[in-house]
Length: 137
Image 1 (cartoon, rainbow, N blue to C red):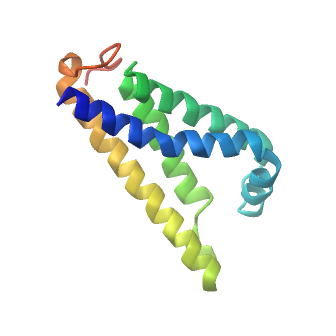
Image 2: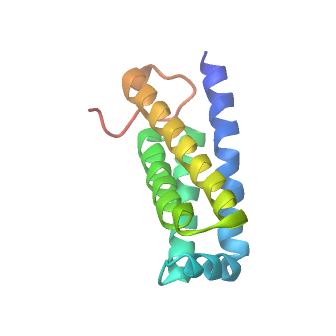
């Protein structure tokens, strides 16, 4: 089971590393898009959220305080869903595309919360990690 959980963590964070790469290599275009969706100041927000998802994904990948990593990812996903992909403000094809991204972000936030619960329930019994969770609710 430990290997399966590790493989799942690796596959899960790949999406976030790809997204972070976009935050750092396409900062201006992402900032322009964020600004068009009402986020200001957009450029610092893109850079900060890029760093947030890199840190969160690295913590999950390496099994270092995975609870903190999942919390960082949930915060990113929910804020992006509601601030950037607010499809209810749009119409036509834009509305459809934003709704898909909104639902994707909600689904990933749900998965992150479920994994966070697993990390908290299993605690130090999780294998193939460097540390246990930082918080123990």
